[in-house]
Each structure stands twice: as structure tokens, then as C-alpha cells.
Image 1: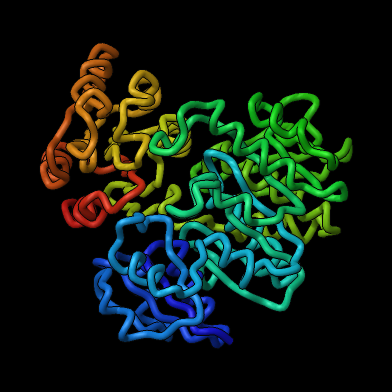
Image 2: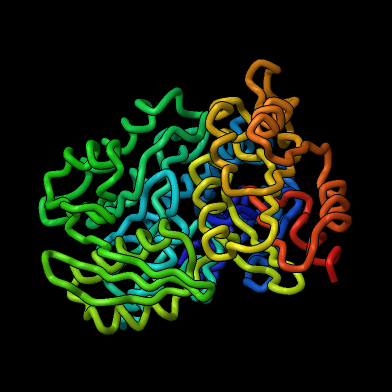
Length: 463
């Protein structure tokens, strides 16, 4: 066992990994600034020595064998600089995952611009249900697993393959460290505008990922996603597609939706596997499930056992998570890219066809608070009746010409006849909802951050 110190322990990924390593018997410590939920509770319940703030003095409080430096830590971070100058061995987060979690396990990596967290949560849950006891790492909080990371004696690893860079000293994507044997590739779009120049730059990273697949591996790729399918052509292993259209190896033949979920009929390899039932909503989630079904059958999973697991899986927190059902419905979602916003609102509208649909949106991610997708956002809110926008998060850090404009989006939405408004802070949005909402309305909160805890405030406003 080793002594491991985390610089930036409060992230979802780093925090869950730290807790898993502590549970394995490693001596774990970590530093960060202010800790937020859910990681605050995760770390508090783990056997981890927590140090407040990034300080050179932390070197006097712990004596690690290795220091893990998270990718949120910049090269001028005073504590990181002090550890490096001292000569202590340091590694990135994905390096640690490869060393401590993956090892020589068969690695199933879930990658793509959208849907990674739900798909990884699903496949990890499914493999557990099949009795395979996988190790896993999820970049979110799964609803059906005890934690976001587990290190087991099983032969499989299921991991979320993030295309974001690894650390300030390793600007390559995290997923290049994860040695995939099976790759689930859902989609590829332009995102992470702070590190990628354009779609071609993003695609180049995925090209490198696909090239890592061994000849006896498998690439599962969404049939309808042109860029992802083009990238999959670089694989030397078999490629299977999944989708709704003719030609897909794993094809959904038909679906039936109601307020309790979706039923779908699946064909695989020209064999009808029958109907499956999920409590999730949104056709994009059907695709997430189908990709996992393909991965499980590849390893010999029983379709009947998989069918039972589909019915039990309830997703991941902050992914179309229903927080309140009466007198209004409040749904919390991580959507920040226009494709995600559109998919989330369409899924909610399909499930709740009655009532006014309120969209609360905070442009918070590195891409959303830039103007990279300014022209795509108006169409993304097509299913919403009322759109309430918060000012972009820390927008003044960006040059004025690069910032996302909520005013421009409001103008575009009003031109479509929508009730759209922009606010400087979340409480004013809550006040508007309290004054105007009616029983049966649906509020969808979309942000990849805390959003001023607006979810809790909306619930209190209607109770």
C-alpha cells in the first residue's frame, strides 16, 4: 500500500477515486479549496486527511509516496509547484486510474461528447447485475451503485472516457490512458472550446483513442452519428453499430413511451431479442442502454438477465433526475451543450406533454460561456414554453468578443414567439417561477455546475 496525496481532491472524479483508494487500504490525503456536494459528503465519510487550501505548508503535514495532481490545478498552483520542486513523484488523474484501477483488467471505455456518465453508470450496473463484479470509474454520481468508483477483484473495468486534457503537464486526453478493449463511442461534436480549436481537433483525439483498440477488441458506435462512424473506421477490431435505422447491428425496431418510461423492441445480429422496459425517458437514453446491451452480450451476458437489469436501472444523479413531482415537476440535468439541451427538453416534453415547460439554463461550462454555439442554442430550446437564462458563469474572465450572449439568445427566442428572459442571478429566476407557475408545470434546470442551488430554491418556492 502507498501514501497518496491528491492536489485537487474535491472534483467528482478525483474525490471518488480518493475514497476508493482509501477503502483499499492506501493512506490518502488531499487538498482543495471550498468543497461542494456531493463530494463534500463522500470525502467526509472516507478515511482521508483533508487539508484546506492549496498551500506550500501542506508539504509539512503529509509525506506521500506519490502526488496526484488533478486537471483543475494550474501550473502556477503554489502547492503543486512546491511538490514538484521538492522532487516528489507526481502523476495525473488518468495515470492513477490506469495504475490503481485498471491494471490488467479488461477495459470497457465509454466515450463521446454526450451520454458518457449515464452509459458508464449503466454498463457498470449491468455487469454487477450479471455477477461480474467490475471495477469502475464514473464521472458523476450513479443512482444505483454505492459510489462513483470501485476497485474489485473482477476481471472487468468500466470507465468514463473523457476527452478533456489530463493535467497541466499532460495536455493529452484522459481517455488515452485507459487501454480500451471495448469502446462505446456514442457521438462526436465540437466541445471543450478552451482546449480544442474545432471539430477536426476533437476528432483527432478520438482517432488516437480508436487506434488503441486491440485486434480482438470491439468498437460499438452509434449508427446515425457520421463523425463517430468515420472515426470508428480506424479500428483494427470488429465494429458494431447501434441505432434506430436500417443497417445497425443493434437496432431498435420500435418504441412505446408513457409517463412511466419507455418500452423498446431490439434486434441484434439479425436476431429479435424482444422488448425491454426502462424507467428512463428520452430516446437518447434508449441508445445508451442499447450500447451497454451490446457490450454485455459480447462478453456472453444472458439477454434475459440483461432485460431484468434494464428495468431496474434508474440512471445517474443530475441526468434528468426528478427532484419533485407535486405540485410541479422539477427535473435536474447536466445539459450545457445545445445538443444536450435539445435532447433533454425533448425527452421531458415527450414524457410530460401537458403543463408549461420552464427551462432554466446557466451557461457555465468552458464551451457554454463562450460564443462557440451561439447560433445553435435558439433551436435547442424549441420544446420549452418559457426560457429563463442566467448570466454566463464568470464571463468577465473571457474577452468580450468571446463571451456567450444571453441577450442575443433572448432576442432570437422572442423572434420565435417564446417567452424568454435573462437574469443576473438565480434568485430572481426563482421569484418569477413562484409568481407565475401553476400546478402541473415542469421546471427543467440545466447546468454543469451548482447554479446557485436553484434546484433547492425552486422546490422550496412551491411548497
